[in-house]
Amino acid sequence: MAERRFCIGYALAPKKQQSFIQDSLVSLAASRGIDLVRIDTDRPLLDQGPFDCILHKYYGESWRKQLVEFRVKNPNALILDSPDSIGRLHNRISMLQVVSELKIDNANESFGIPKQIVIYDKETLFDRQAWEGLKFPVIAKPLVADGSAKSHKMALVFNHDCLNKLKPPIVLQEFVNHGGIIFKVYVVGQYVKCVKRKSLPDEPEAKLGNVEGLLSFSQVSNLTPREKINDKFYKMMQLDDTEMPPLSFVTDIARGLRRSLNLNLFNFDVIRDSKIGTRYLIIDINYFPGYAKMPGYEKVLTDFFCDLAQNKDPMKKNPDTQEGEDKIGSDRQLPVQTADQETRKIAIDEDDGGQSVNKEMKEETPVRD
Ligand SMILES: Nc1ncnc2c1ncn2[C@@H]1O[C@H](COP(=O)(O)OP(=O)(O)OP(=O)(O)O)[C@@H](O)[C@H]1O
Ligand SMILES: O=P(O)(O)O[C@H]1[C@H](O)[C@@H](O)[C@H](OP(=O)(O)O)[C@@H](OP(=O)(O)O)[C@H]1O
Ligand SMILES: [Mg+2]
Ligand SMILES: [Mg+2]
Image 1 (cartoon, rainbow, N blue to C red):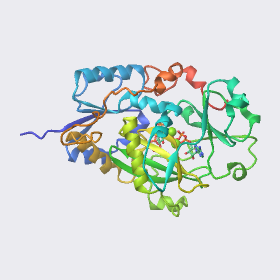
Image 2 (cartoon, rainbow, N blue to C red; image 1 turned 60 degrees about the vertical axis):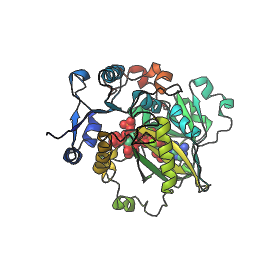
Image 3 (cartoon, protein in one colour; image 1 turned 135 degrees about the vertical axis):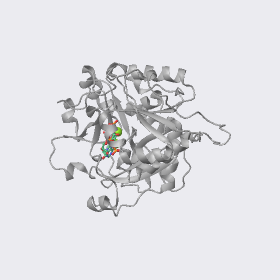
Image 4 (cartoon, rainbow, N blue to C red; image 1 turned 120 degrees about the vertical axis):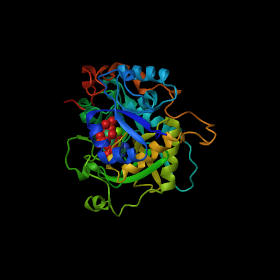
């Protein structure tokens, strides 16, 4: 009898496809009965396949509709992950709301998010009352976090004098000294991996010199797809002596976030407060990050795909009886307003899969060009 293979269709932007779909992943997956097949996003999804699972980091109303139709016609197929769940990460407020709601029992460490406010208009930006309780320096981040270059454009703000350079809607988040090192926690289903990266220095105003009240930056902790995280990398970046957060603590947070976000493929950024060494702050959550930078990502991802193929639903409480919680990738509507709803007017272009942003969106950056 012919071997039963599991077919995963993937829809990824070209850059993501290039970094993630490497021959080493495709061949390892194939050797274990998993076929990875590219979805041609220029053709109707329903004309392609059949797919047992769809893996995607692709946006736009047209794509979303196609996924809904696909689900109706293929009720047993998995969609990783649900567009509504991914949408929550496209707004830096709804993104971190889940962290504030998360409860984890841990006697030694605590976690939370930095103090932050959201500013929708210029008037509020200059209203000192709105700033009450917020201390300089702050980081101005675009409210929208949709993967566009502009959504990564940040600014360190040291005083009130340069506020006219900021362009709402933005989130103003207190800068927390954290020893210049950030922890990135990668989640793939039940798998959790924490790595270290270089971050902004403590007391940036003093360290980075006279910056006239505002300093723009972008993706300080990002690596190029070729830079893998290994011992050599830690030595070169002088990160090797930094103590990692306790793995069980990070894993508890990761699993809690996974459940409340209803997502299987994401990473989050954590910093350790230099003042309170056991206090951790989550500052960012990203959908489908650069997994290929993790050493051995091929095995991690292939193991996850095999679990899916064997119908081992890691989001369920009891994988044998399949009783318990939601089906993976289900379109469970979260009880909060999603980023898509909240920022509809600056949504990404409808038919280009989010590869470009519309005019309105181009203007939504924290710093004036
Ligand atoms: N509250 C904070 N306190 C101190 N440093 C911060 C804070 N928020 C962000 N940073 C620094 O700024 C960087 C960028 O911030 P953030 O991760 O929110 O942006 P991003 O563009 O979404 O990043 P990514 O490339 O991970 O998606 C972080 O990696 C960290 O170095
Ligand atoms: O493409 P957007 O939505 O902007 O998301 C990015 C994340 O924000 C980054 O965190 C990813 O890099 P890391 O995996 O190094 O964190 C980064 O990974 P990439 O370098 O493979 O593009 C992206 O996933
Ligand atoms: Mg980040
Ligand atoms: Mg991010």
